[in-house]
Length: 84
Image (cartoon, rainbow, N blue to C red):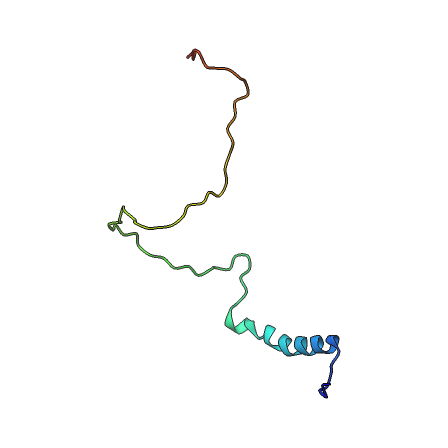
């Protein structure tokens, strides 16, 4: 027998929600202004450079296809001559 206090499940869920909600909001207006139409968006720009790139890569692993296709002929038989 346990002598602990028992809470209904809905009360525990309400307490958990009440504890989590204050952390979800916040004053984001100072941290990051909202971007609207015509508002410039900051970007990073860099100059293109020419560098040597390694052409070989040695690795051990498995290769898996993302998709596959079945190619079938519409007509049975052999191609005897191609007219071009």
